Length: 182
Image 1 (cartoon, rainbow, N blue to C red):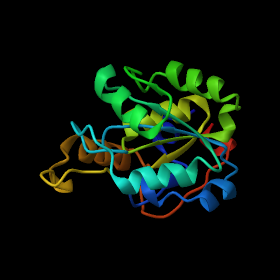
Image 2: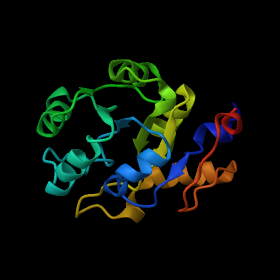
Image 3: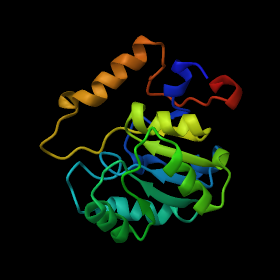
Image 4: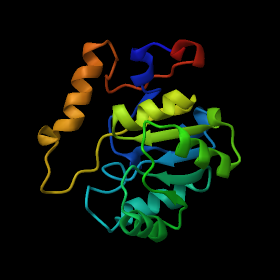
């Protein structure tokens, strides 16, 4: 797999995770979602989930199995978020390692090709999902009121490096076959 393809999301949502619909998952034959937590579901350091997120999870769980997989080491925080959403979780995943993603997919009893890795980061979420052969969805970060997108320097750096090596990050939906990723 060439480096550029490892960072290329299959789908660039151009909005937050709550804009993923059951219809979209059916269109791409996705039966399982592995969701990053920080900035994908809740702003960093937040412990509470929004009512909108709770409603979205209830809607998506009708068509897909959901797991939370986070690099955050705080079992207390990530576990609390997972408990409030009634979802299984893995903290301290060390993405872009594939190990914990594979573990979640195995627990879902689904082949990795039917599972989407959803996150806001290219060098962790998208890279880990692509390395395992999952469908990858890049979403916009869920930022708190005190954090503005232009100051999100880590993501901005990832986007700059990715575009420099030729990754397309236009706010359009992309669908790449496994052959194109190889």
